[in-house]
Length: 81
Image (cartoon, rainbow, N blue to C red; front, side):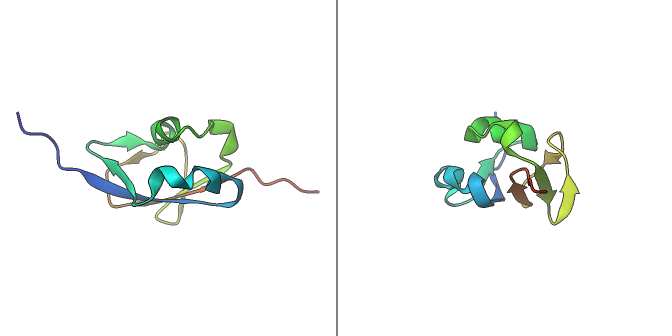
């Protein structure tokens, strides 16, 4: 049985999410399609720590699916008054 080729997703973490950066030094490797939410689980990032999701500079959601080759940008919730 032939395994699926490994693909990379470029994951960029902003502000307080940068503390998880050591887990994705050379991109995030995937073999199959994966949702943004599943990547968060695998990286140990709680969903409520993420306020904005962008895939290739387009606003996305936690259930958006990645196939490899994309740039995933994650931002924490933004507060202010």
